[in-house]
Length: 192
Ligand code: G4P
Ligand code: NA
Ligand code: NA
Image (cartoon, rainbow, N blue to C red; front, side, top):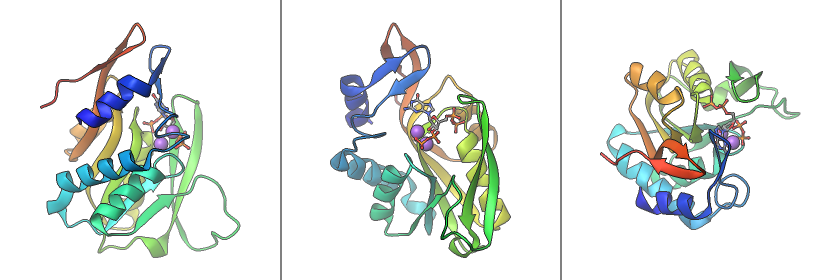
């Protein structure tokens, strides 16, 4: 998506060999107009799937997931990473290992917000090693719900997440696909 690639070129900062800082429009300050455009694009790509629910993980997934929810007019559920005072319901949980941080975290969604009738679209800000998405897929399976696809804002194609999803034949749409970082510059995959 050109709008997003331009914004990454403009405001993204490459940190080291494999991290992109986008705190100007996505991960700290949020550009609502850009989010809405991303949400519309996810809708265009998945509108034939009869999505009933958008799933993401707190915190950085929430902004693009909400934008998608506004385009589809369906509820958005974010998995929680932290124990919540008010979250006392029966939960679906999954372990998410972060290769970046070398820690395992539990994510949780209340069972009442996911049912066997749901057709789910997973949305996340980054696809790196794919562990957050795998955790959400695990939860969707526990609920006997259906996974219709995965929508990612920024994919780092050189990490293993994309391959994992392709191997499982999951429809994955990434609005920006980064092939590599070269001397602090972002190199995008050619658009199909
Ligand atoms: P994975 O889910 O794809 O396996 O991700 P990984 O463990 O590699 O990444 C851990 C966290 O870092 C995730 O956020 C992920 O979104 C984020 N991340 C991965 N690569 C990049 C990157 O190049 N730039 C930025 N800005 N973030 C990246 P999180 O810890 O779940 O945090 P949050 O959602 O609360 O921000
Ligand atoms: Na994230
Ligand atoms: Na993040």
